[in-house]
Length: 362
Ligand SMILES: CC(=O)N[C@H]1[C@@H](OP(=O)(O)OP(=O)(O)OC[C@H]2O[C@@H](n3ccc(=O)[nH]c3=O)[C@H](O)[C@@H]2O)O[C@H](CO)[C@@H](O)[C@@H]1O
Image (cartoon, rainbow, N blue to C red; front, side, top):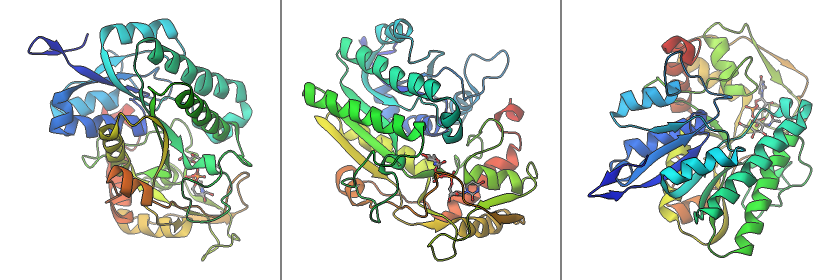
């Protein structure tokens, strides 16, 4: 149930997938903000498909730890966004001001093997969520999108007017593109909708406390968690996918952004609502770093050697991408503050304190 101040029910920010990596860091940012945490109840729904809840605990570990760190509470429901009836129960209990929609499956390789699961979860789930929002008169949405919607860049840096949806290399990428399209159509159909789609570049890093961070199930697909697990001795060596790209050192270049900066970007987007229509905004730093530069920076931050070998390219990978960040500056008054050294130092603090992720800290 929502909490009350002076007999009035507080409005809620509802975060779907709020126990995941970017979601939980956004929960932390909202609770750490004295104004937002006073103004809103922070409500999370998550089906725990990619988040860990310790035996006997009501809340998943990231949320339990955030409560410990901030001394403030999160309201948690173990609910799947595709379950309209359960979703409605949450909307019955809270006066929702805005939904921040993170919940999605996000493993690119898995999406090629299980496309239907990805379309069902990411697209049908999003439609059920949007329909429930509409039925309850909630029209403020922040959608967790990805630079993957741009496909193979026609030009760099990538600005928001770059074409989307062309030559996408995986069902996962298509689900992000289709969800954006659905949101755009909805915003055209009814002027009450205010939808901000945040296109993340490559989120890395961890909370400054070293107590929450990225905790992928199984062998990581993404570069930073892989490097971190090599550094901590969980994995023997890194394969660098491709040494012959047309980049300064031949390895792939990406715009890595600290997850705390990303979380702050959501808080800024929240302050912009309502902003009728559909607005897509890049969240990146505007800087590109190569895989070999990432390895060197991580070795410096951790004091550990990262054994690696250069192997063939990974299917579907592009040579380089990085963001044009002018719109995020202009519209959100936001820019990324953390450096590459911060990203590596924070990832290392999290990984070295929690070599096995959340399971150990329970
Ligand atoms: C093709 C693919 O998977 N793309 C997804 C990937 O982006 P993206 O591929 O950019 O992110 P990754 O972290 O997987 O890879 C970053 C860079 O590191 C390289 N690399 C990665 C892992 C590794 O073991 N060795 C290695 O060399 C990659 O080739 C790439 O050049 O994650 C994003 C989420 O964060 C998704 O939105 C993207 O759709």
